[in-house]
Image (tube, rainbow, N blue to C red; front, side, top):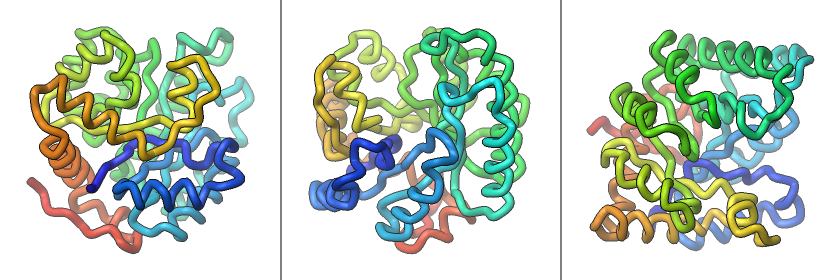
Length: 271
């Protein structure tokens, strides 16, 4: 098996005691790629170490989650600028806007400034981006268009269908995760995303707990349940869905000079 988890918070504190074992078990279960989004600068160095310890499997991104953006965010951006100058990260994420869960409206201008900073940096360095879009979908699409950032992963999209279709027209990729097991609206989105823009994720360890309202710690290996659900929804097979996601991921990173720096990742050909 070659499952791809395009969004898993492996550097979450919930995995502090057995993080390496979690990754090892994921690989044993057939998970070949895990994209690790950052929440803030405190996770960056640790994710780079995991990338070094598990070459080709763990791929780290650098960024600042919108829920971590306070009014005083300048120090974080200075750290981000240093990382960008060193070219240590292959992608930028998790970045975005959150005007739904974040109730403190005084942070909204800072969120917008941080997001534009990262999208502009991604455009300049030709990096792909991983985006959180809760209630900021149209603004995010506008920025992607402004900077012509074509390699964008939209993580756990749950916004309006008209913006979804506009993002599809622009060429954004979409990760479908464990929420597809529980939400009819996400199932509708999962059926709408075209084959060539579909990716899979778990958003674990916290996604299952959030969805099921319990204490369950989710694992990257849960990606197989996502693939099985997608196969049913899209009248396909798990094998076909896995091959589809593999091809899409290969296209996303095709000829990516930054990704080729990671030992163990074979530079894919464009399809």
